[in-house]
Amino acid sequence: MDYAIILASGIGIDGEELRSHGKEVFGSLPQIKRLIITAQRAGIKRFTIIAENAGFPLKKLLEGDKRIESEVAWCSSISEVALKQKPFLILQSNLVITPEALSSFIDSEVKEEELLVLVDISKDAWIKATQEGDIVDVFSTGGRAVGAFIASGKLLGESIRDFGSINLLVQELAGRERLTYKGFSGTYWMRLSSDGDSVKRAEDLIFAHVGKTATGWISRSINSKFSLPTSRLLVKSPLTPNMISVGINVIGAFSGAFYAIGHPVIGAICLQIATILDRCDGEVARVKLMETKKGQWVDTISDQVTVLSFLIGAPLGYYLVTESPIPIILGSINIGIFMFFVIWSFYFLSRYTSSGSLVTYFEIDRLIDDKKTTHIRKLIKLLRPMGRRNFYSLALLVLAIFGGYPWVVGATTVTLTLFLIHQLEDILKLRRVDPDSSVLK
Image (cartoon, rainbow, N blue to C red; front, side, top):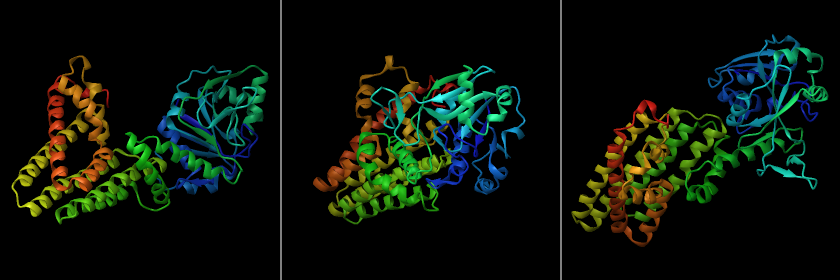
């Protein structure tokens, strides 16, 4: 199924007016644009939008956005749509949902004479039950029906007279026992309403979801407390996620500078600030639906500049304080291992995955048979979470405060050596894996 009809006029499933919701803005995107991009990512390639005045006020909201690659047509009523004998996805214009939920829904089988209704039977934080056990939406205008439907052109043609109201259509077909239901499978959904707080709740919902996508306990439970409020401000600015990535890692680059001039604690603080804010580019990208593989690579490369700055600055500052050759030796080892890590990791991402994010490297075990795991690899798998930036930047801050240069540089060498062993084993085992058949693509 690749065709969707968006109802931006008429009456919704709960009797709500649909004409005004397409223009409402939250997360820096008008709702009509958010809904189209979401459905497009679920697999929809053609849209017909039913709107008053053939969508004249809404059309301008879509102009010039290169993310909208699908064909978009506008009609004043459903009677103007050329209905073919195939299934259509029908969406209310006030629906806020994820691509994954829509993708699961449009894969459903539906008979020509039936209307398939997406209903929420989950027990997540956005749903509550009455004393009688009936499931109702937390939001005042909610209900079990999500606001997404599937019907054939034949069925829509038969019920064309009542299609100004999806509510009446559902009632009519329910009376004729031509209604079926599909359980909701996704992370969240809600419908905008005439309630003045509706838009704020939608933005809160999306940011709450974004906050749960972080990897690692420290990132989810600590860093997100600072990054999410920052992202809420950044999402209202004209800054793109790529600009945010570069700006954050400029702060990170100061880490090496402060280490080099004799202020390891300030250097560690700069690295920690950059690590906390490093979530912001991804959060803004997901809220504004601007995630791209190019953006992942920009973020990954920018991060390595920050790390390289630290790896140069810490041993240099150590040497200037002690004038011992040890920090130069350890620093050279660290930089050498790091460069090997970067070259191999970038090769791995380009050959074995469809991602530009180093987070994907932590899924490498999906390509390697666990039955052949060595004792060294089992140990590394236990220590692997320490390789995440949100962990080691915090650890380096503690070491800088209580141990100074020797502990910072020494711990870095030990950690990098362990991960060098890890990567060498990865390289040996991946020789038996066909990149073209990788499960990470």
